[in-house]
Image 1 (cartoon, rainbow, N blue to C red):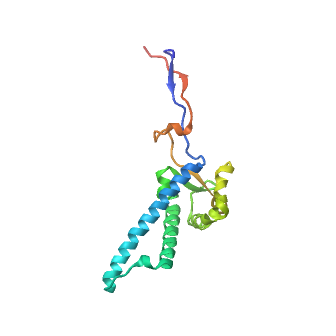
Image 2 (cartoon, rainbow, N blue to C red):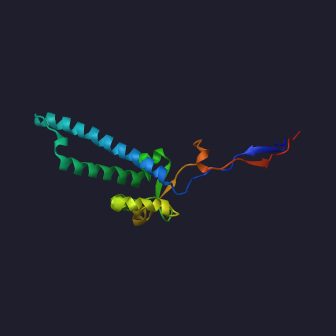
Image 3 (cartoon, rainbow, N blue to C red):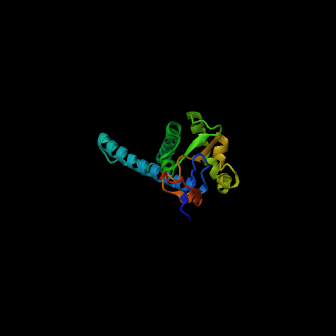
Length: 180
């Protein structure tokens, strides 16, 4: 390297690019853990309160159908609310991704609800709806296509000190001459 050149990293900006399958999968697992943890904690609180109010041992988790319905309603509420208000769930926020409409606008309640309702369809027939993430250039799964949404990165890799995600190498550019 000569004295007239300095190493300047290229802009490692993933902002706005479609999120990959690994990022989305990790975000899904964080959300799954969060939903189950909050549901379990909430279930224990409800069980405790009902045991005190009713004056006998009450076990909410013994009613499997009611628990399953409550879990599905909780998961729907968790996802639909966070997506409609913040355009991401906690798992998505942790991995720097968010959901937008395909026209580039922010997600509204209608699109968020349709996306959450269509999500189980991606699991049908050996998860073929998720295979679209790998096959499609825009990385949209079946539920994204149905809801007309896309999952994108919402942060710059450089600002998160994760420049290796962009897989770019530094380039050499001439530096400004010294004023002396």
